[in-house]
Amino acid sequence: MVILGIESSCDETAAAVVEDGVHVRSSVVASQVALHEEYAGVVPEIASRAHVEQILPVIREALAQAGIGLGRIEAIAVGNRPGLIGCLLVGVNAAKALAWSLGVPLVGVDHVAAHLYSGMLHEREDLKMESAQGRRGAQTENHDGRFPALGLVISGGHTAMYSLESWTKSSRIGTTIDDAVGEAYDKVAAILGLAYPGGPNVDRLAREEDANPKAVALPVSRLGTDSLDFSFSGLKTAVLYAARGVPGQRNREGTLLEQPPALDHARKRDIAASFQATAAKTIILKLERALAVMRTKHGKVESLFVGGGVSANSKIRGELEAFAQREGLVYEPPRLAYCVDNAAMIAGLGYWLLRAKQLNGANASGALDCLDLEAMPTTSMA
Ligand code: KG4
Ligand code: ZN
Image 1: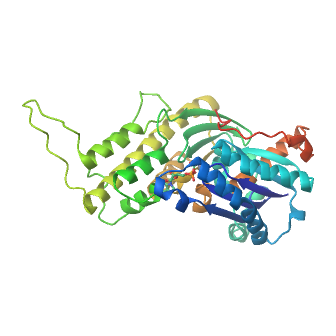
Image 2: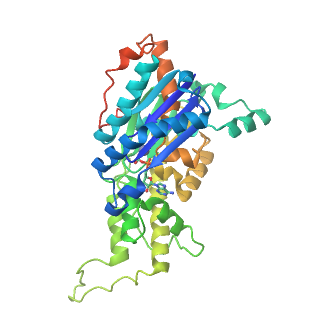
Image 3: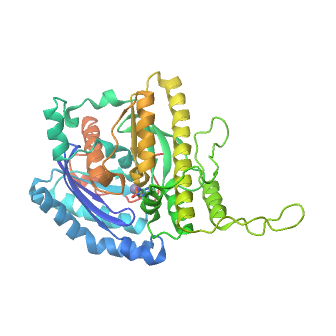
């Protein structure tokens, strides 16, 4: 089944053509980074207007790169929640208009759930390689065998863990009580004077050869002995103090405490590496706790699914692979292009949602039945 995916929840306008939920035939993303750079964050009104301008050219480009016309599209999947409401409305309305005019089913996909699916996406070369190695393509793999699974979404807006029973049944088992980890990355980048969006720049600096991840002692947030929740605001503040010093802090004698070393390149590099190591350690600590809880409940946990912009981070990717190997979990790290916001993950998960709806005899067979699909600012993944 050939599905057109559409994504416009934040600052990327994206469209993709995905076959049978796994084979990505095209994935086009128009980034708005340049428009938001001077504000060091996404301005919702500017983002919505840019989506209006970009949505049709991006869809046309996705079809052209896939080498197909609209007539070959068998269903439309759209990210309808969560996100900035003005932005979501652009994608949702484009999707409705297309589904109605083509007479094909429309399916709304939760953006957070779609991030969890990103490791399932394969490009043509991946599938060729798998069959050459005598492995079955992901397309024919029994998805049931991958569950129960532990899921982790680490992005600019979300940091949460999930217990997944299938692609359509999951429950959230932990979430951030303050900042998302991507938000912490972006704030640390701002503290260190790195360009927006900061996550990839912190990653780059931390990877420099002489960077010392032990140079600055930073707190790993545990939130009690069995909490599965995350907190990154304390870490962010600790980075601020390591960079700029604690304002006006005096010792018992009343003299001002020594200020931190000058914030030169070497110091910035060490702070970036120390922050990154601490963020990775915090995430792995919570995954270990979550896995123990899930094993008590289900006996065996089969796989790990991870997605979201921060899953593109080099240090965190390495730690996640080591964790999965240690714990005997099947884990396919998403390609870098599918970590950040994209529409291939929407089309991919959309395929399974549509199949589930069709199996259950729901009204997924007619576009008209789905034109009441709503855009919503909140996630369904609670
Ligand atoms: O998933 P995403 O594209 O958008 C949301 O749904 O939020 O994630 C964006 C976040 C930003 O905070 C960005 O700084 C972060 O992902 N990010 C990274 C890296 N690449 C993107 N953070 C750390 N290291 C990276 N390499
Ligand atoms: Zn996202």
